Image (tube, rainbow, N blue to C red; front, side):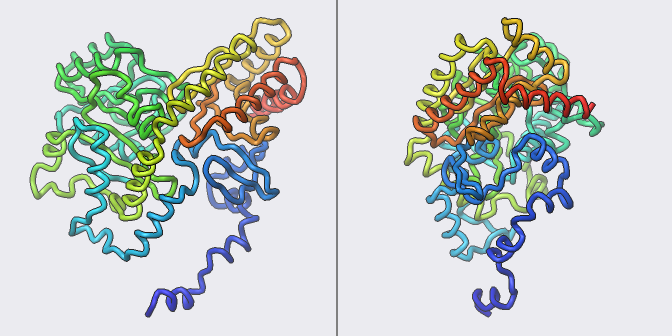
Length: 468
């Protein structure tokens, strides 16, 4: 039976299904998925109906465009529906490959590994999984097995994923609460070399996992910290694990964020998100040859760590296309150049607005931090928000950016007065202009002492009090 005949007999028509049922999207989610998500979206007015997307923009059901400064939490590094990635996926589907037989060696995984490793020439091998948290899980397992030590260190406020292993190195209690017991891992303050050395002296540390720039709050590791940490770890026969799930693939203006610091060569590197092209889930753990050879030490251990959908043809094709586009379109250089323009434009506003305290980051990973104002009237309103729930002012900025200016952003973490910008790496001056103009308008409103932003603030205060 031909593919066309099979399709006719099945009766399945995706276009027809969406046409008939797409209007039920929020009701379906409420009934069958995480019911708190639509509730939250309704509360803050984010319950939009997006119909299509391209590049750094969405369009709603009224035909209005929205600028995406979130990139699906970093997944959409090339924006949405890049034509080269789309074509690669069409091509791999049309090729009818004998994929995932489990007992052969297809070419695409080897080709993608080869391309990835050109960006980390001190590393030798790659394991492909399906997500960032799975890439971290792989690194944790490999570090423990290769060193024969049980404990992994991590930074306070870190985020490395939400499966049980990666949750054990998650620095936020809000994610960890209720899921104990976790693995016996230990947090240190980012930049605290003395604490790192004290823990290493106990002799049971397999490795230290660290984000070169933390997603929560957008905090960089202090200058020299990664290099010094690497030297300490190797002295104690422990491994440096770089979590580049969000910072990797050009986000910070270099292919990997750890390379901002000379001499840093992690033993294991975790990537995901942007490698997918926004289409097919993929994660990768890059590592040194000796680590992989310890884990896969014999034919008996050939499947000791594997993933059912790891290295599938669609994910590998997407990854190869993403790396090709990044090179052909000089995406990393664009992230560095456009990120510098965006940060400079925003930093120029710090002296203008007393509620705006800091602008930081690298490349197109930017943190905008708000803080206690000096004037009496604004200080009273700020204190009201802080008493109800820390982080409400940042949410007050995010909401009008979407509702009034059609720009999607996010608060950088729970109880933080920081907005994080992680737009597609393809944005340029036009998008910077649009964001800065909108942000300026929202800050003008906030500093007027009244207006819609403070009306919405009172709504958030009531909601926060009701949720206690």
